[in-house]
Amino acid sequence: MGLGPGARRWVMPLTVVCIVLGGMLGIQVRSQEERGEMRVGRQTSALVAMLTRNQAQLEQQGAEIERLRAQLAQYEEEAARERGLVRELQASRILLGTVAVTGPGIELEVADSTMRASAGAGGEDLFVVHDLQLLQITNELWAASAEAIALNGQRLTMGSAIICSARLIEVNGVAIASPFVFHAVGDRDKLVSALNIRGGVLDGLRLLEFPVKLTPKEEMTIPPIAVAPKHTYAQPVERETKQ
Amino acid sequence: MIAIPFAALIIGFLAVYVLLPPVPPRWADYVAIAIIAGLDAFVGAARNWLERSFDEAIFISGFFVNMALAALLAFFGDKLGVDLYLAVVVALGIRIFSNLGRTRALLVSARLEARRARVPAPSD
Image 1 (cartoon, chains in turn yellow, orange):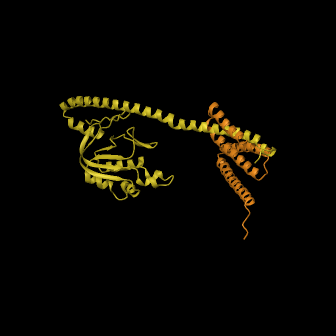
Image 2: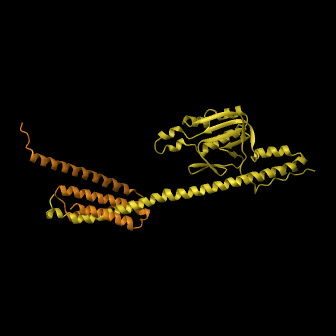
Image 3: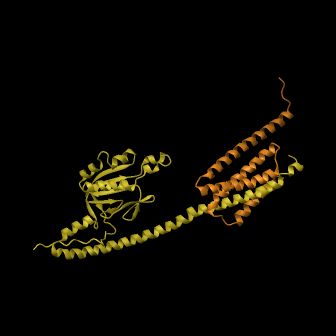
């Protein structure tokens, strides 16, 4: 194409259009960069900082609780020994989960399904372990007369809630993630057969290729609950004294 | 001659990128769709030029009006809760693609014409 008047015709409009188009590309690139930064950079670093700070605090407070509890146990024992209540106190503590316990039992490990990678869009929910499945397993363990249960190191006692919190699961207010490891002290054969019952939770999980590892153990130790359950409203009913 | 519009493109980009504060994220979708509409007008103009039916008035008006209309349509779609945004993207995408294809065909046939004129076809 030569430089005749015909050729010059398109230079002006094209220049105008190019300035506008370039400007709009500039706007878009700029705002996309800003958006990406906002979403990933700023938020993540702030959250990580908050998390580490809170974790350090939590550990510190856990140690403090441990110390105070040892002290309390000492006092209680001294007081109870005189009245011959040590055994009852010990039993209550075990059931309440405020002392570490040891004994025979089972270890159960459940992780997210290996089928997850090949699953199509939207099907992912089917292949991760949910709070409901953990609750079912816990229920099965209690039903098989487990005396103490821990999930990923969190002692399960009365008042231990297993809830779904975003992509994680929260137990006793502590976030845990796959793989989930249950420790339960109790009658090993009873626990194993209760978990392996046909059509039970583990059956369903194995069907979808969740890795499930169930091993009976000679002896294991289960940690105490970090914060003992409190009561504010409940009061014991006064026993009527019959004359 | 081609360098002037090209320089304008870069100048426009840099001017806005360096000088303007980022637009609110809500607008980003409308700007994106306006860019697609602009690209469509651009490719359409290239095709018209090769077909010798290029008209600067149609080009300029088409560029700005289509940009505004595309963004407006997407905006109304958002207000109505209908994804008109997708309709605009699909329609413009198809048009850009078909115009590019037509442009390519015209360029190739023009080159073939030129070669045929230079080398006489072998007689058989």
